[in-house]
Image 1 (cartoon, rainbow, N blue to C red):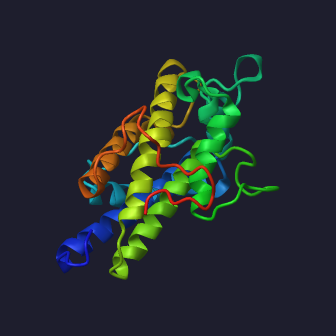
Image 2 (image 1 turned 60 degrees about the horizontal axis):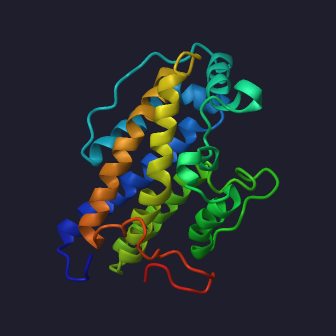
Amino acid sequence: MTLSTAPSARQRELECAKARGATYRLAAVTLGYPLEETWQALADGHLQEALNGAWQTLGGEPWPMFDVSASLHDLEVGYMATFIHGKRGKPRVPLVASAYDSLVGGQTPGTYMLNVQAFYTHFGLTAAVEDEGHKDEPDHLLAMLEFCALLCHFEAQALEHNRDAAPYRRAHRDFLARYLAPLLKAIRAGYAKESHHGLDLNLAHLVDVLPGWARFQQLALERYVGSSPQPGAKKSAPESANQSMWN
């Protein structure tokens, strides 16, 4: 975006940035470990209503209504059986990217996670400690969703104050292309093989539609700041915390 962008166009861009951020946050809540308030929000339809509003702002279809797990216990059982438990102590459908060999691509899991962490560090985020989020799991789906929500917040702030939003859009575009979109596709493929363990239908639908939605958002960002670098091209991630990534 340039400073000469028409107010009506800038307002639409702001609405989209906020809707993207809301979708990321709501997805993180929905796909996080089930809490009483999460189940209640699903049972009341409030969570689906919020998702529907953000989804349609970005051009998506109306959010469908599915039956909700009968109780928090049922929600937990399906979630645990799908994303936590599995054979030989490994989840049937992992929510961490480093659990998928196809995503690590020959790197060690540690190196892969350091590359993800470099994005967070550039924007002043530190690793989770104690009970804050997922300690030492920068490649966890929830951490990635929350990071993208933060980038949308920064983008919205820039738009509201008539500043350049391109650095945040480039970071968002690259993070989607390299990390979040591939993880979402891997989770969907894994769930397609393990869809019989009682996962709540609302969560299952989110797992199914998020990869396509993320790809659509990446393309929308590319219309503003160009395509993400192709595999093998020089990466924009820094070698040190002081090196600029997207400015």
